[in-house]
Length: 305
Image 1: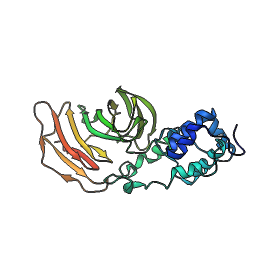
Image 2 (image 1 turned 90 degrees about the vertical axis):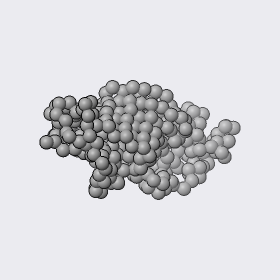
Image 3 (image 1 turned 60 degrees about the vertical axis):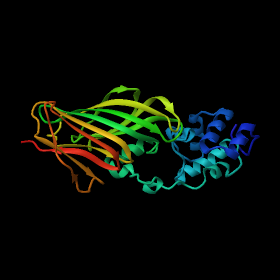
Image 4 (image 1 turned 120 degrees about the vertical axis):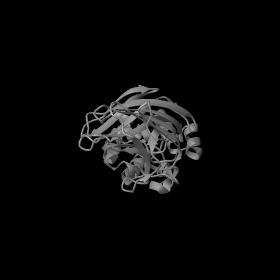
């Protein structure tokens, strides 16, 4: 069925080739040609091109697009596999999108804020950053009686910036070289995850209850359980994009520091910009509320007597 030349195109495919997106054409061609992603992957491999099934799925649903040289080779092979005229899919793709900060004003490349996580992101073929906007982030951090990080409960209000968004990628870190456990998911379920116990880095996909179209919103919750680690003296969250509101609550079990000091950093290597101290009352909990967060790092730091 694959080919040695173009084959007749159905009416809908001809329309999509004129007015559709790369993802729409790929999805329709797979359906009308009766090919699974596994079969397409084999056809590519037979022609010396290696593309993962996950990458093909992301292309099909518009969560990412082929841009690297090897990926563009795969696109030209796909034209042959589907019996399309040469350069058809390449033309629909158009010029490569700008990468990094230039791709989205005000954004920070996630590899800059999560450098230890970059190999895990690449190994997972994680979807591009920025398909979900975090409108509100609420974190409740529990510090145990030994002054160690015990658990973080997170609630996210998200908005899709693209169609067919069905997952949220989260990044976790631990100061101990062990794996962080994700549990307590609500309105989502755990998908793929990768960990590097040497650096304490974990990347995980949370599969949303429903697939979102651009502009649609959802809520998801999860809890991260941390192994025994060193004495905790700070906690922060890293933002790659602007965020409407961030609420950070740090609850101390047992001994309580006299105060917590809010801070922000533009980068991991940059200096901490300190704000006025937050006094801790009878709840043994420090509350930080920030709005209109810009990309960078926001957190609290404290000292133990």
